[in-house]
Each structure stands twice: as C-alpha cells, then as structure tokens.
Length: 452
Image (tube, rainbow, N blue to C red; front, top):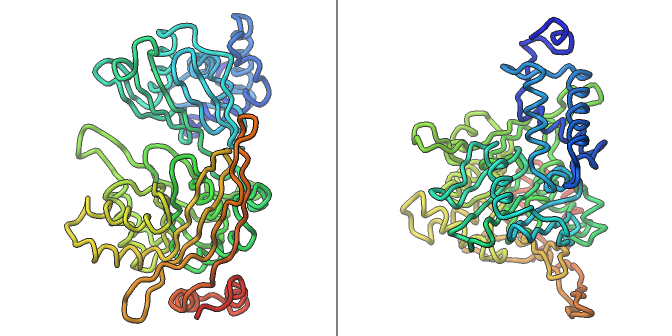
C-alpha cells in the first residue's frame, strides 16, 4: 500500500470484517444511488458505482485486514454489481422475499404481504445459474451437478435456498428463494394498525415474557412468526442478559446503543457452524449447552427444527425464559411437534415428553398468513397445569374470520380478535412467583376476567 493510500485507511488493529463492510456499503449505495444497481446500468454506470464505493471507503476510513484499497473497492463492487437486476431488490427496502421460479420468471414479496411478478428477468438460463452461484459463493457453497440443492446466505440476514437441473427442468435452469429477514422492522403500533394483533394481546405477551414465561411462536412459513418474536425480544429490559442462537444466518439484531454509540443492553448473538468435519460442526444443541454457562436471563432459539428442541425445553424448565419459533399447524399441534423433535435427541416416552414441553412453554402463539397475504395472530393459548398434574389447553385470544370471498380475482377477508378467557391459576402463580407487581398482575387478570 502506498503512503497516499495509507492516509485513507484506519490502523491495522481497527481493520473490519469484509462481510460487515459489504453490508454497510450496500446499505449506503442502495439508499443514495439505487439507479446504478439496475439491470440496464451500462459500463459508465458501473464505473460510477465503483467511484462512489471508493469515495465512501476513503471518507469513512474503512479498512479490511489483508486487502489494500483497490482490492477492497474491487471486491465490494463485484459483490454488489454482479447480481444483475436482483441487486436492487435484494438490498432494497420493504422486501421480504425474492422467488426465482425460473430464469425468466421472478417474483418479489413485500413486507405488507403483496407479491409482484417482475418484468425483468435473467438474460438466459446460464446467466441465472451464474448469478445464483455468485451469491452462494459468499457463504462458501457450490451449486453444481454434484450438489444441485444448496442452502446458503448472502449476508447474516439474507438466506438463499436453491435448486438447479436436474432437480428442476433444464429449460427452467434454476429455482431460488431469497429470504430477507428483518424482524425489527415492525413496532407495536404497526402490528395494531395492520390488524395483526390487538393492543391487549401484545401487552399480555410482553408482560408475560418480562416476568419469565417462556413463549413459543408457531406457524407456517411466511406467517410472520419471526417478526413477532423479534418484536417481543425488543421489549426485554436493558439490564437483562440475552443469549441468542440461530442457524446459519442472522435474523435477530437486538443490540441497542445510545446516542453516543455505547451499548445499552446485554446481548450475545451466536450462529451455528456447519462443516463436513464433525469436530468443527457446531449446532444449536451445542450452543444451548454453552448458553447455560453464560448465566442468561433469556435464551432465544431462532427456530426449533431438530434435536435442539429437547435442550430448549430442558433450559426452560431450569427457570430460564426461552423464546423460540417452530413450524406447526395450530397452537395445540405445536406441543406434538415439539415432542417429535425432542425424540430425535432422547428415547423418552411421548407422554413424559409432553409433560416436559407443556411445563417448559406455558404459552403458544399461532400466526398465519391469510389468503389475502395479511398476517394475523390466530390464537394465543395457555397450557394449564391442573393440581393433579393433568394438562388443559385453554385459548386466551382468538381471531375469527367473518367473511372470506373472492371479488375481481382478489381475496376479501375480514374478521376480528376476541378474548376467550383469562389465564389459569397455575400461570397466575408463576407470574407472582417471578416478581410481577400487583398493578400489572391485576391488569393482566382484567383482560379476560379472572380464571375460575
């Protein structure tokens, strides 16, 4: 590196991770110069894009270990400019998912649930495969005839699932689902305004979480369960210690800073690591075991989809509040799903495991995306533990659909949330034991009336 280049770089001990720098520069360029990322951008536009990247790197004194300024700018430009027309959607705002159904058929799903089929598409089947391969290369994954089905990530909150021929038809070339996850992009008022949940529902869930009640948010893909779980976690007080565990890519960003950049809360974010070498592989179960050694107040398991479910329920039964999500078809079916996942780790009778998971997760929240793409919390259910040890499933809140019809090719759906009943005596005791003050406790009881 020349002396003149050194003037624009931070000292070596302040060098940053390339992935972190890439996300920062992508955000800046997509906000200020989005037109340069379009499919029609020519050579001059690409050259101009590179100049803006170089200017940002210099002005912000950004350095990456092992890369001089020209190499860093070139690497950033390549990763940003080589995704063709997809780039401006991947790094645009308000977009949740990009679906490549075929090389000439691409759809975009927005955060409000609407879907738009794009006029743009790849130049050819070969071009589509080439672009998707470049995306996967960032996470070290290879898409070829030996590995025609690949999961990868573009950044810590962008996940990619891909298929190529022969798993899809040769004239299709490649299919991909690119998920852009930002669970903190909705606040309490947004959920209420959009009809996803009511004020009482959100207050009830946040207060229960605040006072140590583990919660599982269930639902199918695209139902908004991660978004809701992400918001719930933002309601945890700053002086509580949170340990998050996610698989492969980052969906949560819970660290909060004050106006001076000082971190206000206590969060440890962790990711699993996949490897063909078993000794180097770190899965969610491994991280759950490690989490307990960090003395957390809350443990967050991004999604229960395997044997980590058993470790999660064990952690919840030790008194640590656990927040997690799971794919399930209803509140009650969630417990059966947990049992089947736990059995991948332990050879324990179903009835015993059912007792464990219902004790571990007293509250289940079921989310669903309706046919009109609107997301609703369909039910909040408590599993009541009776004095004799029996379990009673009691719905607290429910959403009922009053109208569902098709008009001019559009789904017209209306309905409303209602309170079914109050919380059980067993949950009341747990809240009091966990320190809930009387004024909040009385407000919780008033939501549905005191349970009998």
